[in-house]
Length: 268
Image (cartoon, rainbow, N blue to C red; front, side, top):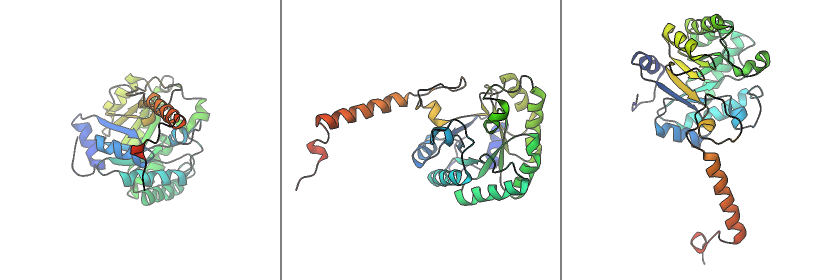
């Protein structure tokens, strides 16, 4: 769905109704935000996955509000058409609905992002309602929620033993006022059922092809990391290999004296 104007919250419900799949990727800096926008992406998510990609951490838990605001402002400023949303980091919304609203307001006001994403289902009903009532759009996130990794004991598949709970969570998120919901790492059949039940778009990550849209971490789908990749990631490029090769060639050229050449030097 290409538009000349920036995409708005209302566009995503129309996309679901028209069966136009929604495209979402993460970005944390100006370079990738600009490239995503130029490519025609629908939504750019400033994810708390910056803890893994940008900071090299094992979980998303250490990311602070200040760090999210820093990266969110850069991304939002670098995008013209795409809708920019930002993750609320761990402990920025769990304390109370009032605390969550203060933090959400600060994140939107100081970054220019147009929505916040909140992990959790039935336990976040009042929090989502509180934020939405204040005029801040919310994206929900149910299924495997990375901020609860210590409760889950890892990043395993959700929705097999607790199928009814995931459905209840997704329905609760919609009823609380969220305009979209991320379904992470749940069986494709369950994701299809939830997508059919909800009037708001579902954005899948490891949730099969029947969701209204898909999201991936940009660095994962570009092949920038050589470590273990989740099963649900399709690598559209192997940029890590290309970058390493470019670095090696630079090192060789500097050491051999081939760089800089006369063309890359100035004369009196």
